Image 1 (tube, rainbow, N blue to C red):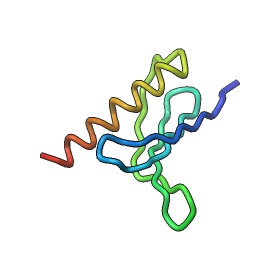
Image 2 (cartoon, rainbow, N blue to C red; image 1 turned 180 degrees about the horizontal axis):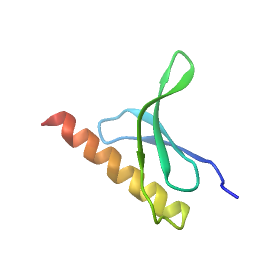
Image 3 (cartoon, rainbow, N blue to C red; image 1 turned 90 degrees about the horizontal axis):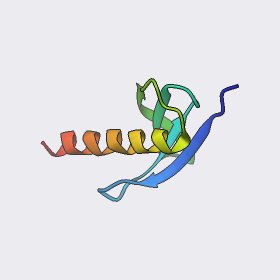
Length: 71
């Protein structure tokens, strides 16, 4: 049984986003627009066994995306 998990996090540049993980391999990064959470980036990662591994991977991805914006 898959369990959907959400985390609201503050990024290094001060933005607030929500990470949606389907409990398996799919992630959606969401931003608040007009009172709704809206997907702006999705990615997959296989082989995650725990919620801790999932949020760590998501935060690594967020940090990489922010670094790409700076370049």
